[in-house]
Image (cartoon, rainbow, N blue to C red; front, side, top):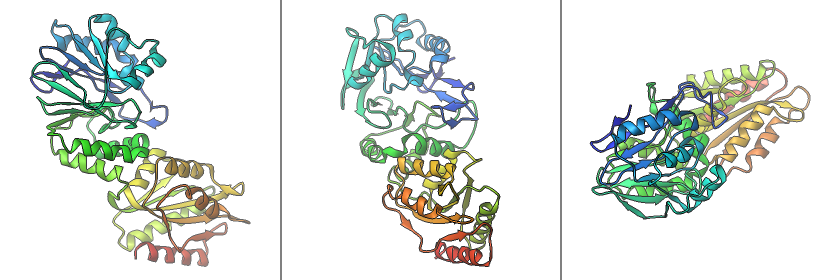
Length: 386
């Protein structure tokens, strides 16, 4: 049932192994966790709820944690339905409880659920506090991390930072997996555009004495917090996390793929520490996006298609731009049998991204690799490894 985090904080979240696509687009082979917490004091605060499919399970866990007591507050930090869907169920079960949220969150409650809980609500803003007894909750506004209504919560007694969706990851809590891989894919897919706002959050967090981070997805973080904070700083400042090169490609008859494989082999032979190759038609697009942001250099390779660029490549570049891709080196490989235009189109699409440096050397393949295009690959390898 409920799980103790400290003597007076309990976990009442759930694991979801039914979901196939998170937010309708992200593959989650190991499911998702929807986290909720209870702070037990003279007054009791429940931190967020869970997805609608698990309302009954959540209420049972909540009752277990309460041990016959009645909660005083439901703190709604974030209004996405996977965290807010059971506000109505909670308020019906505990009619004396008060809902605590930002003004924007209450507006969204009206939009989602038809009620703004007039007469039983507390509207919070930056630095608002809520006294529970031993615990004092201080609320920190975190707009666009990653919705505008988000409030995060610091509990001074336990030094716990409840961070809404920040520091979350894909994956249920009953599955062991590397944190960084799925947290990175989660961050760049969902939060990545809002690096400036995350930087502002990190400045607030730097002033707090934090013993543990309790996000709304993924595990509770209570060891080596500098590691997680440093990663978030790198990601949100669009810095390079790892040495290496990401290659993203599309190929129709295999000739562009052959060029990519030759390029990757030559880069590895030249000492490149990591070459991450992504087939945009077959591999997870979110994984490709993660790799593009993780490494400092990106190679785009595509066939010409309808005098433009192959659809999967077009989609990928749009995602890069939409998520604020910047501060990277980019190289381009194109293929075309009679009128190759992919390089020009890819570069034009990337003009909306700021801070990119394009390699002087590119590769143009006329149908299939030949001595000229192989020589261009060699020149590109030399430039990339310089």
